[in-house]
Amino acid sequence: MDLKGIQLTWLGHASFRIETPGGKTIYVDPWVMGNPMCPEKDKTVKKADALLCTHGHGDHIGDAVEIAIKHNAVAVGIPELCAWLKKKGVEQIAQMNKGGTQTVAGVRITMVHADHSCGIFDGDQVIYGGEAVGYVMEFENGVKIYHAGDTNVFGDMQIIRDLYAPEIAMLPIGDLYTMSPREAAYACKLLKSKYVIPMHFGTFPLLTGRPSELQKLAPDVEVFEMTPGVTIS
Ligand code: NI
Ligand code: MN
Image (cartoon, rainbow, N blue to C red; front, side):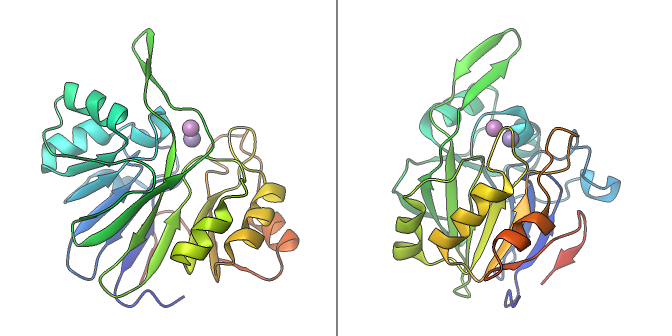
């Protein structure tokens, strides 16, 4: 996989740290400190310019407020989720909705559909968090990465392929709360990305899907299994 200068680190679950060719640090679904798959060395966030939030579940935005405040990072998300983040003290907000594109930290970010729930569990309340989303990121060097967020497979993934043609797709495969390898294999057919990075599996015993199963079911795609904390570039 040629990332042309992008430094990509999986922090376990759906959380990724991306250092862009322009020197910015982006977190997608910043769940770091409380993430049992995140190596100790990566639990200390040194720099964060933008946080891309796919939805309001704790295993995705668990550390968003703390990181955004500490590093003055821009939080990207759907308006209802951004309103909640703002209420919690996040000052820099770049809200958007599905279908929209904006440039944050030098990256062209398009918010795309995901099929999942998005309540924010805040104390003893469940707050409406908008809808769950995915993101297509187009970096300065032309590389396009799709992070699907939490979702099942849906036919409009074909629209994502037709319009954005991401060469790398980060897909959940754990089953139960998201796609299983069977659904993810179907997603691979729709997306036709060259590489698929499996995520949202193995964090808890219930998330049983495994990259090897996906590779068996989707022989035409290269399933690229990352190791938490190991940076590829
Ligand atoms: Ni979720
Ligand atoms: Mn999740």
